[in-house]
Amino acid sequence: MESQKAFFSAAPYLEIAGAKTAETIARPVALKTHLPFRVIPWSDEAKYVYVARNPKDCCVSYYHHLKGLPSYGFPGDFNQFFELFISGNIIAGDYFDHVMEWYKHRNDPNVLFMTYEEMKENPEAAILKMASFIDEEKYGKPLREDPGKLKNVLVYSSFKYMEKVFNKYIDGNNHISEEDWNDIDFPDDEKKVLVRLRSTPTNFVRKGIVGDWKNHFNQQQSKRLDEKLAERMEGTELLSLWKKYM
Image (cartoon, rainbow, N blue to C red):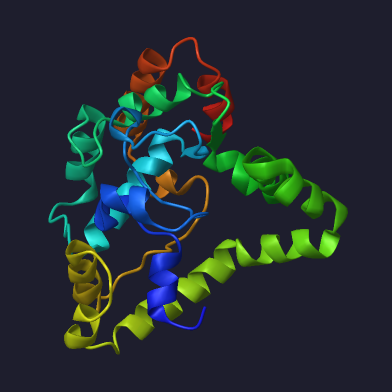
């Protein structure tokens, strides 16, 4: 992309851009969000790709995310954040409520429920699955028939490439003055966040691995979250899907 504006407006973050963005933005568009199902702007004509991550890695990732963002600036340590996470007192609400709300809609024709772990284990299969879900004729079939196109998608969606590109545009953002940001047609809250990023070292794309929780959890924390998972997700396939990762 040629500019920071193009980069940040290509796939707006709904919580920053505002709900009206979903109504007024030009189609087709991809919107990012952490919102739970019960408050998501819903349309039968939209396609929803929900990515669930095992709760231990999610807890660690979310901790670093909130710790590094200037708009949040979580002041505590991981042990303090763990207690907030397991009790459900975090932004976007209780993790288990969040996952289960979307899980109940996994068979809806316009919902694709995936796991972060399956995307990491087999990126090619995950990409083809999403492409077919969004539009088989427009995206799925062309990727299956053209190895070159599929390879490009794999490269440009890889952790290594996203880390490089995102850091580039965050760095580019540092060279845009506050006055220039005010002239850009972004929601005020989004501009405030981007302006704050100019003076705050932020590592949005951190590790992107499965199992980093082992570097943060103690034995008691691991056991408590295992018990919580078994209690809240009893009778679902998620227990077996995540067994080897926890």
